[in-house]
Image (cartoon, rainbow, N blue to C red; front, side, top):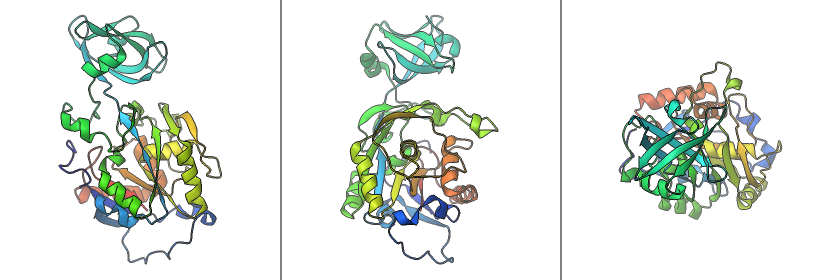
Length: 347
């Protein structure tokens, strides 16, 4: 999908029913008794619309959303030679510096500057071993440079420049605190009306923050998955969110994660018992098949790139064979993939 749909919330929704590993992931003593399993005649996949989501989440269950806002963190500038260069801010550092990455690497060596315009430039002050940089702004504050020259960092597979439409649609309707370089895309489908409908139907909603970093687009190239290096991402679990998770679990309800970012934040802050601790932290958790989920019972997500850590998380949650079959079904049924694409929910 290169463009968002005309109407937010108009996406399709593939309902995926797991048939492997579910009993191991969930402790029945922590959940209310569910109706008997559906007859085997019910297909494992069901083609629906995102607006049907309130029909799928029972009253008393908890929906957890990521309220991060995407920063206008991409800068296009020129080197002293006049050649083009690019800088992507990741998060603030110390003493006015920012952790960043960019290309070409030769343009971001310590002491080199990239001109943005009107006497404003980005200068590299330090090179980290992992290839990230510390940069500072010359001729303006970071806030002014972002306001004047920062661009929305659309994913690399969207092959066009951002437009004013993206400024609205590449943010969730509940985005609050700025800090991400990519949107938590599973949340892009929600509208205020749909959120109200869920709450009016007895679904509880918890909010947390995970600042999505550039590692979300980094393909897994190592054959040994344990050798793939995840870029650390900051998260914040408010006390209210941790409290709601505890209350819902005690009452026998289930936790529905809106997106892989919510899964990683919750699983990174959970004890072996599944109790989630409030607070801030960083996570480099890579969830791959074989991982034992401690908090999340159901997953709402988009369709992800091959060889991505996002797809591996979905496969870990859903089961590898079920995930691959679901993707083949979605491709055959012409679902739209990636950030502006359709959604699937694993029940």
